[in-house]
Image (cartoon, rainbow, N blue to C red; front, side, top):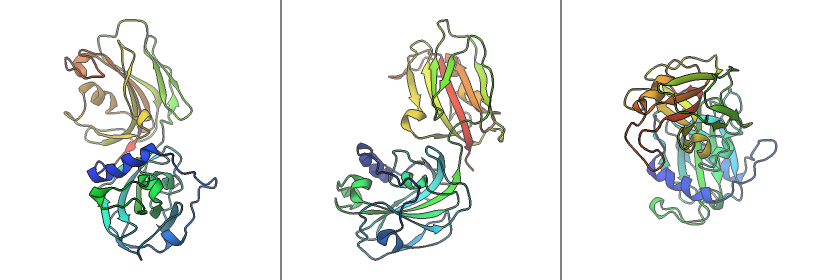
Length: 309
């Protein structure tokens, strides 16, 4: 499992300032002159062999399917494990890839790496796509000297959709406990947390708000989750994957996570939503950060979306 390579994040950061291009109502991007001339060989999940005449110039986003997957089509916001190769449309040079050793997590229709994430909303698990984006849509028409990308260069993305996960917890709703923080959900599943006007509990609280029927998380698993964290005393959100519009992958092992978070997730089923109240000794203790004061009791609402193999 890899994070996005450093050079790849350069491309992601630039278009975040620009509006995403409009998605077709029927969720079908055209396969046009730009995407159809790109030849790709190789198995899904392995580094592709790419051949194309240059320059490849896109006037709008184009998508061609090289391998048609048989999974369900992704919904907006749904996370997928993908491998990506980025090719300069002007030169045919492979600029960067994700390493092809487990994939990275991207959410369909998120603001990360357009137009790839837009095309994911039209994709099925098991597919390999050729996505060609304009210079404006992929890097806002700005040169990227460290990648050798000129201001006018289109970019070509080879996208393998390896696995997909839930967009939000879908388990059966369970009643919360009296005195626990109250949780209300937006239509997309994003939680709002109201802290009681009371002292924080001395011990940990683990409360299942939605009980999923998927496999149970085990120590050592790579859990795909959405989460929001709030401090009890300040009632301030200090971290949220929902705000980032990008779920996270956490390896469930000692040392990788604070003890209270690890204890609260191990044993939970995929599809569940869990409320965790973590006292300082199971959290960050006397450590302080700009967003978390020392000796803070922490509140998390965590949606268990899947397990990344």
